[in-house]
Image (tube, rainbow, N blue to C red):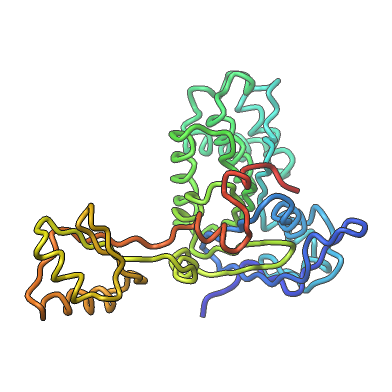
Length: 316
């Protein structure tokens, strides 16, 4: 049976008369990536702050790392690491000094702290820059140092709150590889992100938060299957074959200019086999078949009524 790294039941939080989290339930299995998506003000960062003991919940049964959040906050803090939206790196000191400062905060013996700092700087390809002020680092380097600092205490659960915001595509993909390696090593990652592709690439499970509630949860594929709009497109080069196919597939939509037919489909093997079987029975062969399934952008818009462009901002 899979153990749960994070369990939240009936999580509620309000600020004055504004309800930010309205009784949400979350479960995150150990050694997985869980992504929390949502538009501006949905409460993603508030959820991270509560689960990482930075903010107190108004109500809810919460367990992190096997510990009750209300009764054992110190045990929870010992099990987790947090990388927030804004870097914790001190730009006035070197990368190595940032790492050693974090080792001191974790009360590591001096020799042990230097060993851990050196290993993490090497792991995150920061050894050559270790003696340079962190203010001279690129955005991607600062983010790598930020996560390296988070790992000094060897946490088994890491909260990453929009870790790639502002990074260029190369640095973002580098961060994805780091996250994959962490999970391969058994670490659980709770991720909030404004990049839907990021959730699609990394997350084992995704929850969409909207108006303080979980609008949907599942794997990326499960969420995509909930949204209408999937279809199969068949293209023909022979007008005669196209006409015969249109007569055979009467439930299709015609594009006479492109000699193409479009049929609603979830893209499953069963449905594709049925469509091709109907053509085979009629002795018709398509020149090209393409399958379109809704992507996470479609899911996000359908569940929140918010375009992904409008969702790309910093949230509370």
